[in-house]
Image (spheres, rainbow, N blue to C red):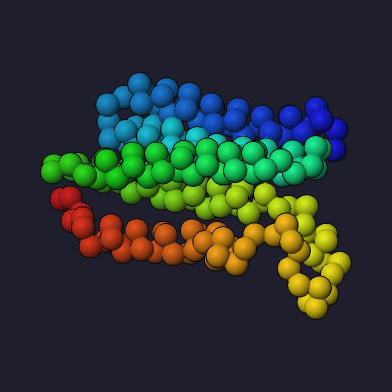
Length: 182
């Protein structure tokens, strides 16, 4: 892969995120009606998914153009998870008030869900840290065992648990804690 094409593919998710933020701000400023509140906040929150896509693209493309970099393989998933956690906290904050209005209720749940999706995409970034081991693992046999550079079994199970266990446990917690506003 050409390094310039690589940078183009890395920048596309960031540009998409900036567009989401700009459009969300535009919608929020357009009107004070509840549908604008929900749409504006949801558009802005989509930038978290774009950030997570950027981290995934950065790790995979960097491995294809320059090889494995342990620093990037650690830093970029952390950036993606931070964006998803901030988005989930933002959604939760919209739900945490005593007098939650219907628009805050809807926006809070959607934004929280967008944060969980961003966490799943960030998990793809974390697991892509060993993207180049796919051909080596596919060429080997079961008797060859796990490649030395692969994640440990504990880390592999944690990477699987993020998109499976976390949304389920948090969703059940949300269902128990909140009453739909009337």
